[in-house]
Image (cartoon, rainbow, N blue to C red; front, side, top):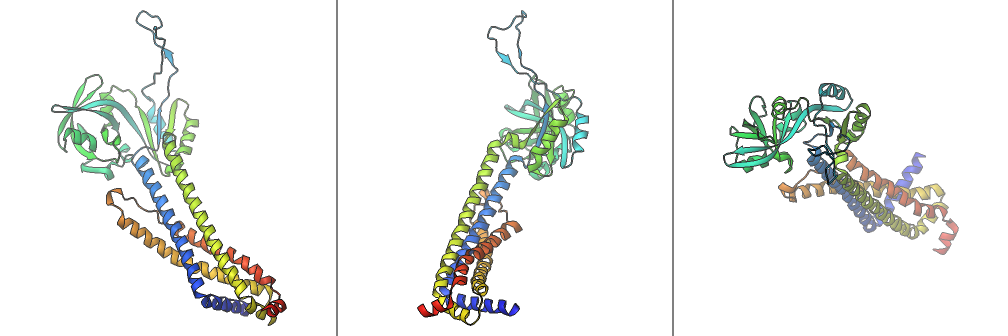
Length: 403
């Protein structure tokens, strides 16, 4: 059996070397297909990671909030139903037993951070400039949800006393720097003095309009007995929705919302990207398969006389078919090997040619490298089975007689 395999390999190699121009074209075609698949997978993967990072990289993955109350009609001062008869929704502003919720949430597997927050609208004032801001009271642990240390442009993250952290957009509007003193005013007109201890950039305009203060100071500033919400960060960002469903079953007196529920359009776009990538890769594989089947089919016709002689000398149908299967495997392995290097080179060129401000990382993983290479080899072997069957059916006497 070993001699037969060696013999089949030798004949297959001779056929490939003899038709070196055809062999070169097939190998180049396979390598280009593998390179395109590798680069496309890395590009789509990198783009998706970048989009998700910008969306929830520095934001809570799950938010636990007070539930909405039942809609009620608003009475006027005389106790009668107002003439316009509009129905208004009101919302409970606070979660009072938040410590129990936080403790329970932290016991759930996969939860990385669970931190209370207090949210409220307000104004930041410096000199004659007044800017509307979103004020958020956070704990020291809660800063980790927003990755403030990584996103810090200037200063530190110490929120004790009068210190506050300010988003880049607000700092630019107020021309504020670290160490500057400003006033924060709430919707009731009450104001407090604050010192800018750090300026951050979370990567979006809305997030950069945040002003972060300590949790206790925010509760006092907005006259809260409880908190506004509990923000949660999980280890696997894509598991947030399932984890949120667990909390919905556990907690009936609060409302739970994951980042997936807030970003349905983004998820739909990501699925469309993945589907497009899969479709393109599928047709690339079909093209490779058809090319190999066509060229090896022609080779089977061209080499029919030699195959007939081999069969007359004792070669079996299986050996004749095996020659073309080995040819397909050799072509697939060679093309996949070159394609991997071509794809990596294409990725490097793309990164070097892309403007730094618009650049995002490519997701080059073992799966992205090995999958297209393995598929190319499998497609090559399967495609070679078509001419292999033709070779197996050849009758030596008729082939030699007909030339």
